[in-house]
Amino acid sequence: ATTAMVDATTVQSTATKNKPSSDPRYFLAGGLSAAISHGITTPIDVVKTRMQSDSSLSSLSPQNAALQICQRDGPSALAA
Image 1 (cartoon, rainbow, N blue to C red):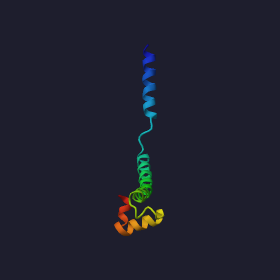
Image 2: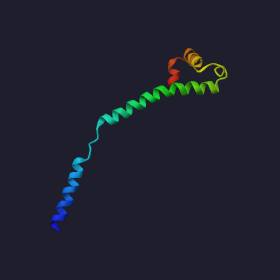
Image 3: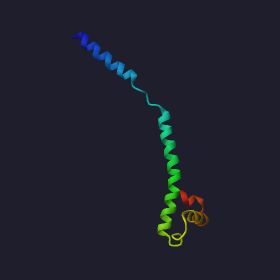
Image 4: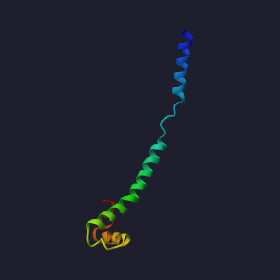
């Protein structure tokens, strides 16, 4: 019985030792990929929403609508 307890304890401590530690690179990679994806998609979504809600932009191409938004409200409007 004692041997079985030692073996179980040894197995448990070995499993704990082999558990990968949390690596900050995964956290940084996730944050960087989220920042890049949001930085790309947010301006596109702003232009799309403004084209749907503003009749003066609805007849323009997305590129021209983005230019019009930047001229009227400044480039920071695309990040809103």
